[in-house]
Amino acid sequence: MKRPNNTALYMRLSVDDENYGDSVSIETQRTILQAFAKDNGFHVYDEYVDDGWSGTNFDRPAFQRMMADVDAGRINCIITKDLSRFGREHVMMDYYLEFVFPEKRIRYIAVTDNEDTDKGLSDFVPFKNLFNEWLAKDTSRKVKAAYRAKYANGEYICTHAPLGYKKDPNHPNKLIIDEETRWIIERIFELAAHGHGAHKITKILTEEKVPTPSWIQYQRNGSYAYIHGENPGEKAYLWTDTYVKSILTNEIYLGHSVQYKKHSISYKNKKMVRSPKDEWVRVENTHEGIISQELFDQVQQQVAARHRSTKDNVTQIFSGLTRCGGCGRALGYGTNKTTKTPIAYFNCSCYRRYGAERAGCTQHYIRYDTLYNYVLARIQKWSKLAQTDEQQLLAKILKSNDRERTALNKKQTTELAKAEKRKAELDHVFSQLFEKWVTGKITEYNYDMLSEKYQAEQTELVEKIDCLRAELTEERETAGNAKKWIRLIKQYADPTELDAEMLNTLIEKIVVHEAVRLPDGTREQEIEIYYRFVGKIDQ
Image (cartoon, rainbow, N blue to C red; front, side, top):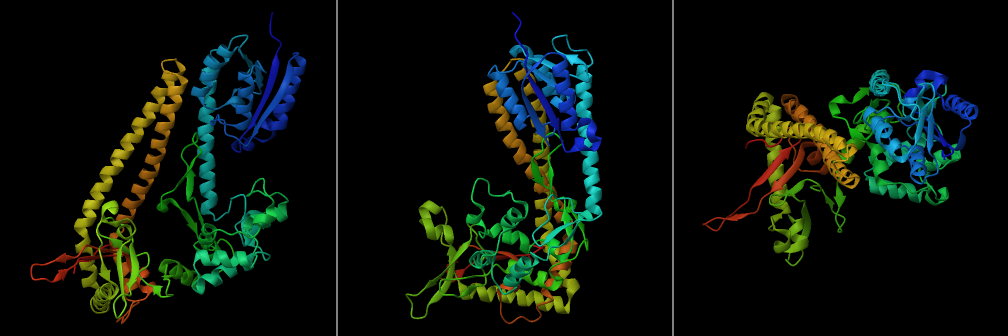
């Protein structure tokens, strides 16, 4: 006896499909499917709608719910407007049409393509699926090109405007100042300019009951988009350090647009990865700024300084700069109060916490005044040379870093080639793995296990490749970086003392090695200073 057709009407619309107008809208699909089911006597069990989902992604929520109903035996027939509504990835389409549906005895109908598995699929179906996938790829390419053009034109195409701004009602891709919330941005930058770090600013905003962006959106839209399932009032004023930091470094508040910081891996894999910095699209003066350039620059210096206070309320100007020459971890600051005159010092934080045996490192002790005097002497030397003979300093920087830079460049180039080769191998492995799965040579359990393993490795490789490419690009700007550093140190003519701003402007890190006791009883200790943009400079 023939089973009754308990039918699923499946509809899908991606963002890209909206370019084709009403012909593929959800309502148009629903009208076609309902009419077809009624005219042909199909009993509709349920409708499944994925609105805003790409056809290359088969993890769509409504699609997964439909397949769960298939597995549970609730439906035995699926109808879509055409093949592309079911999916736009030809390998997966073949998998469902040739393996899943016959095995589960599911009838599938693509109405406007005139395809029906009960009547036998036409020989053109594989070509139709290939064309649908090609169309998805081509559409993705065109959409990205359109976005890039909008970025270059300074248009803001994100769904929500950043705090302090709102979308211009007459020009949806243009920002205008939101007078109701600009004061929050001004308050945050004001606090930062007065020396408060992100954590302190977060605490002040919470204490002053300054509403968070999510709470503001909730009040305006009536839907609490960012904190699901909770009473919005409970977290109306709970700011985070991360969000405050993102505001303090965002050039959008100067009136500039910086976009394409992230992009999807491919038209099939929508996971977002960070774009190399040289691919960012930066356009100045696209809208009215809230913060002046002078205030923004001042805050960036405050952010870079990263100075913190000790328990004795003494500002630690070396904070975030000192590194252990043994394990690479930060040096901890301390004070020896057992002596008549307290002695401030640094030593390895790992050694201090775990001891020599567990840390696998030694003390790397250095007195604060010793480090201070050494660093001051180095900066005084380079500052004087920058004032008297800039070309000599430039030549010294380029010469001292040439060997190190060449070695690093070679190492990074080799790593990049290996990573790209391995990524290509994984792409091939995935293709073979899927073929083995669909042909029954490996079980679904083994496929899932291996697929998860390879996907994790593939994600790491993509991030590594992007990082290496960005680093290699930065290294090609050596001469420009050297001149940039010289311009910075010329700002500090004849310095007589150090402060956090100077140190963080000029220095990237200070590596302190373990002291060595010489035969004559004297103590010798190597200190390496890595300057921003240029690295080490020969003495």
